[in-house]
Amino acid sequence: MRAIHVLSENSVGMTLSSDDIFEGRPMGDDFTFGDGKQNLSSQLSWQGAPANTKSYAITVFDPDAPTGSGWWHWQVVNIPASVTSIGRGASGTIAGARELRNDYGSLGYGGACPPAGHGMHRYHFTLWALPVASLDLPENPSAAIVGFMLNATASASATLTAIYVQE
Image (cartoon, rainbow, N blue to C red; front, top):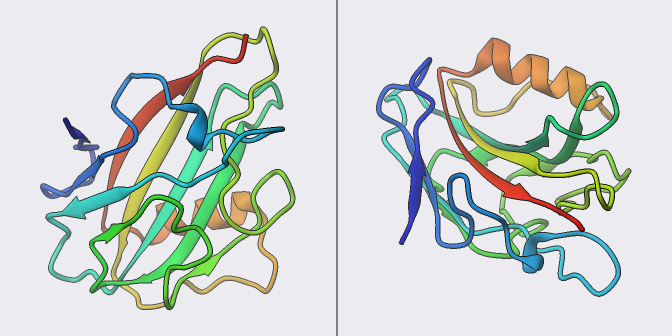
């Protein structure tokens, strides 16, 4: 069963779904970071983007990280408008896309890894529809700059929120 969640605030019928993660349900260990974990990005599919869409971006953000500013697990921009899905483990393989540094300090996807005993964390997988083919970013942008530019530029977005607890 595919989970579909639409962020209705600024979407125009755009949906985001996954065969791997489900709205409000725990993520499997395949999508987590740490010793012995697979650290795979999840499969995602989308539809219903605005007609002016020229590219997409995907972000994964944990607002519950004990940092005061959350934790960015993935930021990939400039995904061609012709792409409407990515497969499991696609981080680093999306043709034409630009993957940015996550809060672990590496390029690409970094899976869930909340501190043990910290309780439930939410992971917002967000698809952004952009009316530009390439997001205008500096060489090594901070996650905050990327988030700002996405919020300032996107014509629609859809979010699927999974959870994870590390005992």
